[in-house]
Amino acid sequence: MNKKPIVAGNWKMNKHPKEGFSFVDEIQDLLLDINHVSVIFAPPFTGLFEMNVNPPFYSAAQNCHWENSGAFTGEISVSMIKDCGANYVIIGHSERRHIFKESDDWVNKKLISVINNGLNPILCVGETLDQRESGQTDQVLHDQLEKGLVGIDSIKDCIIAYEPVWAIGTGLTAENKQIELAHKAIQDIVSSILKGANDFQILYGGSVNSGNAEDLIQVSGVDGFLIGGASLDVESFTSIARTVEMVQEKKI
Ligand code: PEP
Image (cartoon, rainbow, N blue to C red; front, side, top):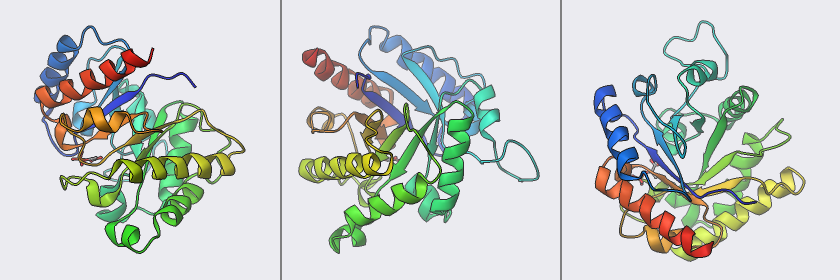
């Protein structure tokens, strides 16, 4: 697999549309010379329409509904997201799973809808602190992936984000070895479910910032980052993207 590393920013419920548009313009200007990294912005739905991004910059939705249309008050379908020009959809973020009680079954339906509509999913998986401390990390990853991938034949061009719940928005980062093992476990689990599949990328997410990005991007199996807090600030987000670019340039 020879895909560019990814630096994706999940803005969560932050930035009004105009603020988001000027943020994206500023970052694209500052990173004009970026060649070896794909940069993804995931604004709230209101900021997705008319977001002006050009490769290697892309936009993503933070969630979707699996039906194309219908009586689903408050929901947004993948075809609507596609119509806004987005290429990616984040699915199963831990805030959706834990705060909004999204089940693996819903995550699976969303994944199928994203793939069927020709967009690229960013499927989030990860264990809570209790699960890690009781030695259940691999089992949790296995369950989330097995249930999330029901009915899927290929995850070519899909992205999986390993996001330990205890590291999201807490300032705690998983240790390099923990990340390496979790990414290896994800690779093995997916490849056993989908018969040798290895044409997908695995991002790490959990308190990535401009200070730890250089170290984390060099962990074996890390193909990029999904970033929350540090993606809201021009300086820190561009600095992370530049760091990943620099590390990637050295590899080529
Ligand atoms: C996230 O929301 O996916 C995330 C990783 O957040 P943070 O970078 O703030 O931990």
